[in-house]
Image (cartoon, rainbow, N blue to C red; front, side):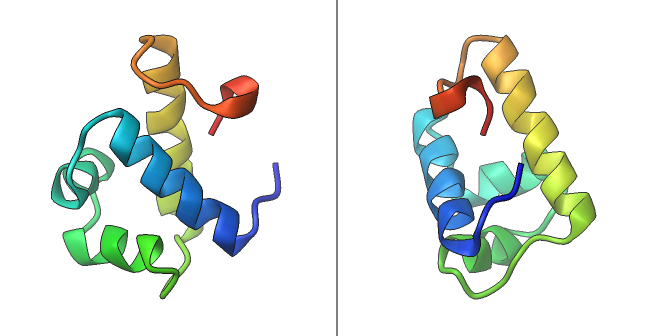
Length: 75
C-alpha cells in the first residue's frame, strides 16, 4: 500500500499514542534510534525500506494482539 510522507507521519503518531509508547520506546521496539522516530514524526526523514518493513510488521503484530486499532485493519 502506497503511503505518502504526511500520512506516514500521522500513522507513526497514531500508533505510538494508541500503544502509549514514548518515541524512545517505539524506537527500541523497531530497532532504530530515538532520533530516527523523532525525525519521522516531524516529517524530517522517511524510513528506509527495512525500517518501514519493521514498522509494518510491528503494527500488524499489535493489531493481531488487539493492542492497536487502525483504519482499514492495517497501518
